[in-house]
Length: 175
Image (cartoon, rainbow, N blue to C red; front, side, top):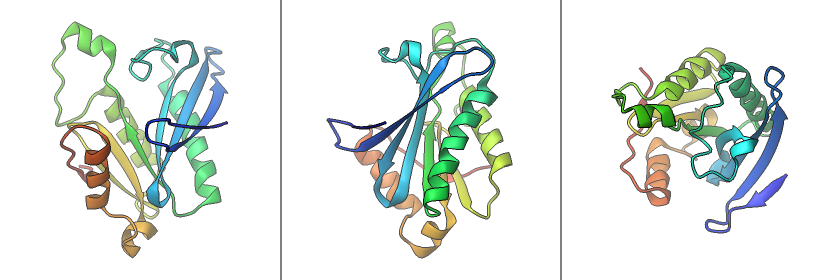
């Protein structure tokens, strides 16, 4: 299903899938940006009206299954367009915020570390250049062809992030 963000007029594709373990339905939003760049977000359908929907935990302990479903959606975009790039923001867990646990922002939050490990293992450096902003827990998979041709650059992505969202974004190599 396709929708349009009324504030930004960006196109958002909506995907849905049901977890085989918990039988919960999830929504995946794929937001289109310039130069075949897509932002991927997901949440449990039961909390879709919550402003914290990206941060809420289901406590079903199945993140690999859920993220793998998102990756299958990404692969569908990649099969249709070999020049796509992807980005994620790893939302902080509300439990971390409520409990007041100190988060080492140099390493990212728990979700960020999971995404980083999984995506680095699944996608090698041949197709995507993987970079991040650890402080803002943003993970990017930039298409190498687009990067080498100059169609897209780290600087242009940082600039766009700073235009769209309040913050000081600084993208660097994954370590």
